[in-house]
Image (cartoon, rainbow, N blue to C red):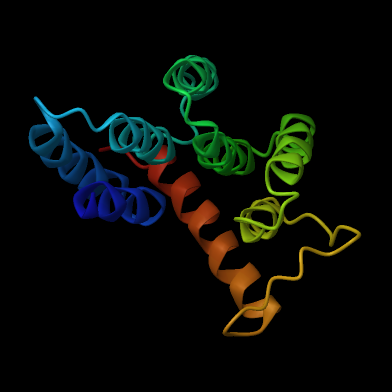
Length: 161
């Protein structure tokens, strides 16, 4: 479980290392019935690949797999991955639709900060009513960090490997 979460965190900032960590996570998960962690690992791979053409279709398949597995809480992770993808590609309309779905998925208050993160990544204005998330740093600083990750991913995608 920890290996999958490490890969998830790295997938935003260091997609190359994230793929290495995901490979190790899949080795650890091989032969185990850890459907939740396996699906979360697939979500981390989506985040690591954000900005590439395959992400939306893979997200669609992942949503179907999540439904089949009966693990609806994972949908919000896929939507966060899509928000990152659309922010990287500066696709405002799909980002807005993703944000709306994410808002619905976090309406209970669980993971409400995902909605704020999606807004920050896409440089979108505040929503009403606010999520009520309280950040350890100023909202402006948190927004800047998420936007920096989006910019770094754009640079990564345009830099020859």
